[in-house]
Length: 396
Image (cartoon, rainbow, N blue to C red):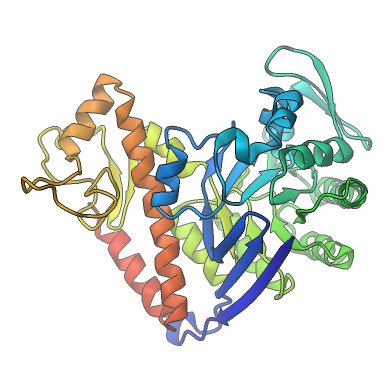
């Protein structure tokens, strides 16, 4: 089941006049999702270092699972014994699963793509495996994800220094369209009660994007994603496709930009009409010592933080900064941690360091989307974007 309500469109004036930003509500089998929304990535059935309860406390409404990796481990038999991913990972709210296409693409020389599907060696044990649109739909049906994705071929920007040509991008896009039909047909044959999204491909070529979009819309998917961005292309190329494609998708269906990106990318994506985002950046950067704050990015490994008593972000109410509730303890202390402590944890390799950093970064992303929704509700999106950019440029 999927229902999408378009609640409000942006009426920004001045610099942001003509923005495609919109406010929506997505109803799925496991709950309601207010959009625009950021979806934390839980590759192996867990958002790294973060308890499901903590995700709920920080406002996560929907998370991702990875079809390819869950197929590898723990495998279909285990997933079937739990009735799907929700019960296995103890997450009661909606889940979106990707199709495995991106992971297959990232295997490089370990895989061979044919019209039928993808032959590859398991990165876990070397077994010879085969992923097809039908197999992807069967796995995602077993996972019982609220939103499944068609199997597509992720068109690379370049391979070994060779930038993908329009002819190569067309061949890839057209095969993804044929796989979209097969994915839809198998999804229906399995009588999957959830929703299946089509994925717009076409590389960096607007004409191919439009062809892909038109044919996918004719297939009448419940929702649509923009794939094949953030795959190594220059930033200006990604922004060009982001500006071209989302607002051309049907207004009465949800729009998902896959694998993007920085806080600035999310705000720009909203302005271009995107409803849903995901990216590993909040947790991956956290594990590498980079924290996102209202006032720019903070590198916690820098020596200047060794004696700094400030929280990561004085405006943040996450557990790492000031406690999820922002309430002081009875003795007057705060349930937050200093930059000096976070620096110390990182330098010592203590696991609490990336855990707190992940909580903070995810909270920042989810709170950013909450503020975007509030700005759209109040007709203040243009004003919000101007203040967001000024704050981020200020620096920490």
